[in-house]
Length: 530
Image (tube, rainbow, N blue to C red; front, side, top):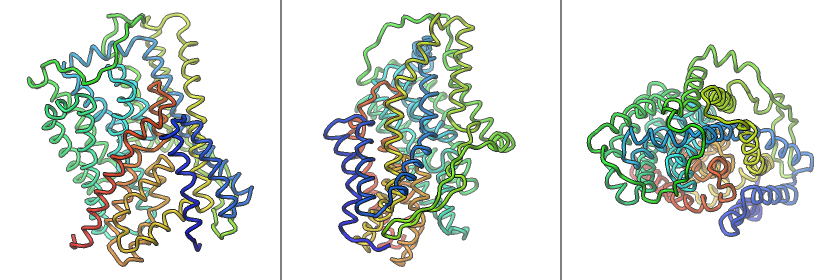
């Protein structure tokens, strides 16, 4: 499909509208997403020649795809409301004091290590929707809690979720040669290790200020090196399990570190939330194991189902899907027909694990007398009230992404960048991965969307494809920090829905800078023959 400069600039309009409304006009995610969707539809119809039927199908695909995200939001809010109603968060805060009186290490344990562990096994926004309320319960401000979880989950967005995004990348490119595969793994894990190390230091800073960074620098660096080197070594043997294994080891190690004499001294948070009196029924009768009941059950059920192929395949055989016809734009961009588009396996979906954990937690707390009369009504009411505006925003963002993708806008945007930059394209290669995740809120989708594109650019420029492929998925992992749909999950469960623009403004500059640094490394590798 031939492109011109007018078409390329037109593809920027929906993205710019979204960013301006979120960052400058301070609109909520639901309003900004609706406006972005409207502009993407107008561009698709007027500039790219997409028919009304084609655009309608793209919107329908987006609505269907967004269901998998919404199904995470509601049950995650159920867990949060169950924990809040029972008084579990107050007990968790007291229990973390017994783990270590150093509250900055507490935040690192939950917001960096535990969130990374959840990304390793579940993904799909679960680390954010689970981690943010836990951090708030420990005294972290809601905005800071969302920022911390976004940072903590980023490095696991390629090899986490049992290597799903990595599988998506290699399914689109030719890495059949073992040497090429190993080089791609080394490149990718090396850069992801740096992302993780920087995230750990930033989380220490968010929790404890400059003193928090200085006090915890050695711990973060040692853990970061262990995680990065461990992921690299295990990925060369088994990419599916590498992130999960390393994150599990780190989770055990952080509790050992908390027992060191160095961390037995009380250290307060740099900017803690105002403590509120707890008027729930739990009191001092609830212990820390009971307080963590929903989260412990979530871990157990996710590990048992997802790591056991027999159980996973049996439960995963029941799937829901929709059929879609293929269409063409006036510019010749073609979409595929699907007999079963984006099949949803409800019994192995993260939302099912979250809902089951919430139900188990509720039953246990009722039996133990920690939830008072009327608790179920309050839990459901609060969860629904928070889910509805979040769902509207998620649907709008996902539909916008699908309209741009199906009508060729996203591809034209990426191809235009490659055509204009030519030999300096490697500098911008991570931004393509970031763009894909920003648009789809999924590194998996980004890799499927742009993986083969990165390979084609490498062939066109007659350069080694491995650094570009690594830049693609690492850029996508960084993009998960600024993905609007993932941010919405955080702001919803943190109780600050409508502040998505503020969150993006806090992390956008850093994400772009990190992509620029990795782009410079990739570019230098071609110049110096690394």
